[in-house]
Length: 114
Image 1: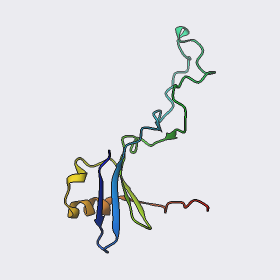
Image 2 (image 1 turned 180 degrees about the vertical axis):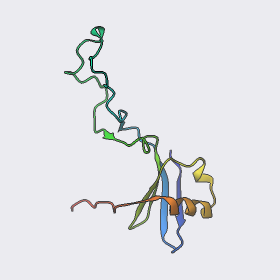
Image 3 (image 1 turned 90 degrees about the vertical axis):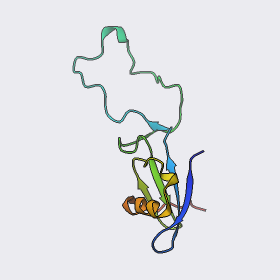
Image 4 (image 1 turned 135 degrees about the vertical axis):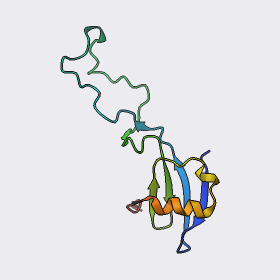
């Protein structure tokens, strides 16, 4: 189970923090086929059938996010810090707030229609 922390920011707002390690992301972050002569003859035709064994949604992640990030979320705001700082879950609250201050601010979470 992933570590989880609750802390208060400088304005006394309650934040949750946890690490996100994607297991569902697209591993290919760039086009690997950069040779102009095509695949070797022994490779066979590979462009017409799906070779993945696990199906589902795959999201292309930037190299910065591919190994995970630290997520911060309050009732009204979200932030993200990548890469995941070593032993972040054992830091004192003051140090965790310092990580939070340096984290990228994200747009608000979209609410589901009811």
